[in-house]
Image (cartoon, rainbow, N blue to C red):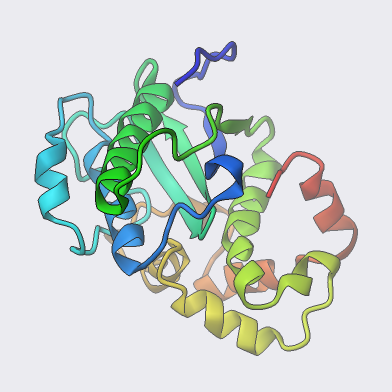
Length: 230
């Protein structure tokens, strides 16, 4: 992974995006998505990880708990994510020096080795440089989570980007059942006492946040897209 000029700061949040090289798909089937999610969980540690162990566990669903710190000595806190066939979005909080860079290097390398071995290919799978957008204002935080979750609609109702959703109820159902986003877990566990959901500070209920998702159009959306890239 190439050297990056920006310095990631502990305690700060970053929207991370990366795509398949040459626009290729990085997920070909369900097992690929599951393996990627497992990597997000297992490589989030300052300790060494045995890639061979992960290869043997292909197809085992990963933890889908938003903000989970299941690993020992985690590098980052995973706030939310959304995976699409040829790219992914992560909202991360760095909690150790160099955490974001180390985390991405470890789990992207691990997934690339898995993908290449499985598909009998060689070389890079992801673009060399991932995009990292710092969250500079508190007001941007919730907007970015909304943008990340709504990206799944590209597979169901692409016109959401132009403010032309035909049936929100159908879109809502799709988002609630899309397995490669943290949104289903986020919504189901919103009110749980054990949840470390940081969005509770701004939204009283999961329904409040759902209404926030629905309010994506117009001037508000345009402002959000000034600092986001799909």
